[in-house]
Length: 71
Figure 1 (cartoon, helix red, strand yellow):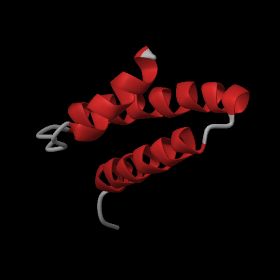
Figure 2 (spheres, rainbow, N blue to C red; figure 1 turned 90 degrees about the vertical axis):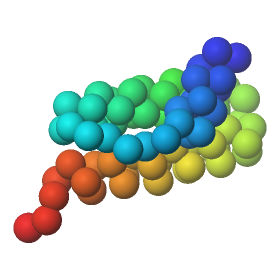
Figure 3 (cartoon, one colour; figure 1 turned 45 degrees about the horizontal axis):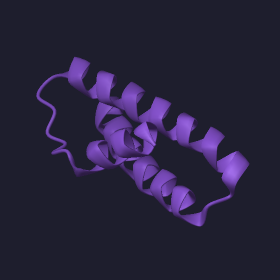
């Protein structure tokens, strides 16, 4: 499955973002990956897909935390 391969590649990628636009772009990318995997998960109920979504969600949360900055 192409979506799962993209998600695994995203997970292995180094997450050092120099600019805000790179962070926004990667946040949107990981969000679309999570939603796509969720559609597959609804049909197959594979626990490995759920684990992958959880790992991607952690990455997404770290990116968004960095985007929001400190109060």
